[in-house]
Amino acid sequence: MRLYNTRTHQVDDFKPLTGNEVRMYSCGPTVYNHAHIGNLSSYIYADILRRTLKSNGYQVKHIMNFTDVDDKTIRDSHQKYPNEDPMTALAKFTKHYEKVFLDEMVQVGNNIDDITFVKATDNIADIQKLVCELLNQGVAYVADDGVYFDISKYRQTRVYGQLSHIDFDATDHQRINNDEYDKEHAHDFAIWKQQKDGEPAWDFALPDGTKMPGRPGWHIECSVMSVKNLGQPFDIHTGGIDLIFPHHENEIAQSTAGNQPAEYANFFVHNEHLLVDGVKMSKSAHNFYTLPDLIGRGFDPLDFRMLVIQSHYRSATNFSWSGLEAAKNRRHRWCSIAELRHQVSDNPSDEQTDKVNEYIELATEAMSSDLDTPSALKYFDQAFDLIAPGQTDLTALDSLLSAVDQLLGLNLITSTPDISVDDYRLIDQRQIARQDKDWATSDELRDELRAKGIIIHDGTTPTWSRH
Image 1 (cartoon, rainbow, N blue to C red):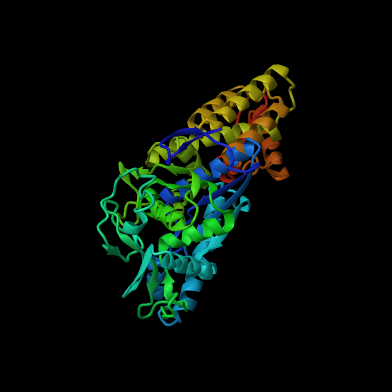
Image 2: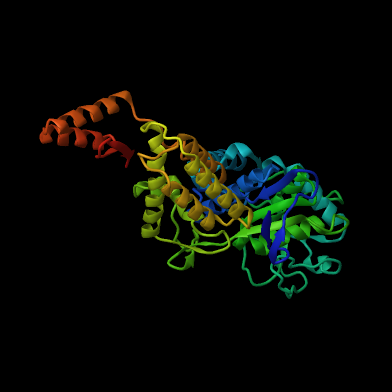
């Protein structure tokens, strides 16, 4: 298997650092609102990567975090629950959006059962321990508003900018307290933030005994949660390219400073942006859509998954409603063929089986070559072209559907259940009316089925499909 490694800036052969288990960490959501579909695309690609690793015979331990304490969660939880204790408000607010996120992950086809989710607020003691270690090793310092990581000290023994490969001009002790900041200059960044009025806070004693109640900075949360659950170095770290700097650079710095291991993660796998009108989708730019927006326009969340995987993860995708419509049509065609398994008799064909298996193998090889989803989709298209109502080897069709679902997560099997006995009765009645040339009754029954979401395709043997 081969993957593009942001750390080396090339496609490298991949194998686990130890044994047959791949230890993978994905930066998860900040749980303060619905994830916009640009964020969801990143999680879809992480899901695709895990599926591909498993198809190559690896076991995968996949960790994803919830950022449930940061500037935005604190701000919005206070607005939502102004009369609650800040800690209570934060917990209630973020718990709601954790559930929203998990529900939407399932809707877009991501297998959350294969992921272990961890929360920043469950790891405060370990975060505080790392803060103290960095202070004791002289790569962090105390300021009047918190504890900061000292980039200039780090650069005396390590390279800062391993992923972005930019030689940042870091002036001593230019500090930034915001959790997210400009992408042009390196600044010392907060690893512990002293409590402000009205903010939730955890008790904390600095190494010299000074009390500094507060909460962690954004970057150090991921450093602690990844290493605590996966060890160091671990195999793969995933995320969108917008996280390369500063977030992932700062994770590396915190995790390799002082006497810590020199390597944080072996592979960094970053996906490109989902664009709207050629511009990165973001909440701050007010040019984003959420999954409910798509559903409100009549699209299935799996239509969005098809749109995402039609582009290679390292190529920017321009979102448009017409593009989503095209992805919907492609998925609908595959679903219509999947539904044939409920309707047609088995027509065994060694030739069809062999050819379908050949396309499955080609698609699997494409996925193992740096997650080449566009090529995999092309091969699956060719496999579906082989199957028609009068020529369906059900074993070949079952193999095809299983391969698509396992590799691409499009859930063709579970999203195409059989219709009811009553629906079949209406189809039979309509066929009798057509044979009797009772066109009025035939049309009424067709419309009744259409109202139930079932489209009839007339022929010698009529078939059905869903809208």
